[in-house]
Image 1 (spheres, rainbow, N blue to C red):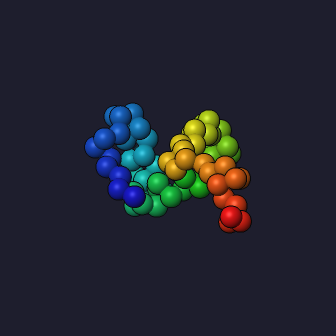
Image 2: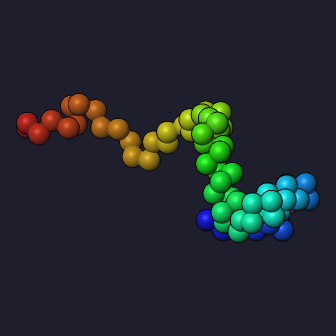
Length: 70
């Protein structure tokens, strides 16, 4: 995963930098700790979205076409 601090909003960047300074963490450590905290708080279940529609790439064969008798 590639992460760029410069693409964050100024507020988010300040909060991450404050967390790094307060705990003497690297950026990697701060991001890992934030991810662990989010997962333990149930963020993965709250961030769900509807399932994507399944695309039909190959037409389905009917049972009569699959029979090998003949």
